[in-house]
Image (cartoon, rainbow, N blue to C red; front, side, top):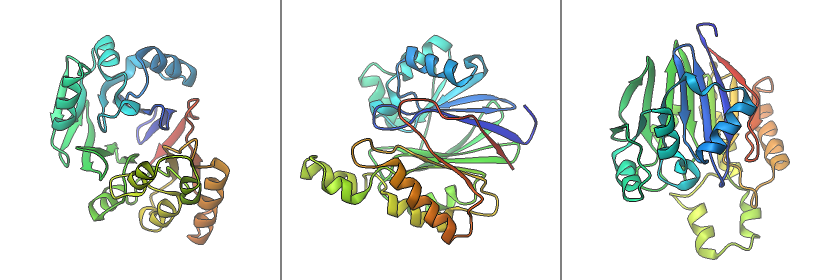
Length: 263
């Protein structure tokens, strides 16, 4: 691996499990552990990820599709888990907190094996965070569960070399689904999820001259369509004169390609 580049692999993204493997010249990080230990290791093997390179695990929030394997996986590999104080407290109540834990307040910055991490609060459930990760001037912004993007969120995600952001649902598909009215309101609400149209509009502010990779995450199986999302994204990129930008839609069932991110 050369200086000035990192590798990003999604092990899976969606309502049934989320986990990202970020490999840098200084070691690797696992962002979210939403699968069992066995499944995480199996997906790493399929994706060509070496778990021995891991230096730590980052956790965005307590929901099981992000935290399911946190304790068992981290304990098995003797990895420290970096998560917010509130999330650690709730994981402890469920006996899902690893032995090695490093807590922080949302908004705090810290270092993991020479990789710089900036956390930022997301409007979802309690203490949900996103991450801005920098190594050798290569930056990756990650925000997968949020109901809207305020100024602080936009500032953290703007002009990253790689942007990983959710595009959870199509509003018409959600409203026509058989989900309860209460659930629909929650998903559409301030602390819910982003829909395709909202995410597309955000791109005008988030994509900068340094952005070379866009990955759309946490796509709903029931209330979204990858081809519809791809069309919406392509139209927005054409409008922004960014047709050359690499972009992909992360899948639930299988790991992604190995994306190279450079400054």
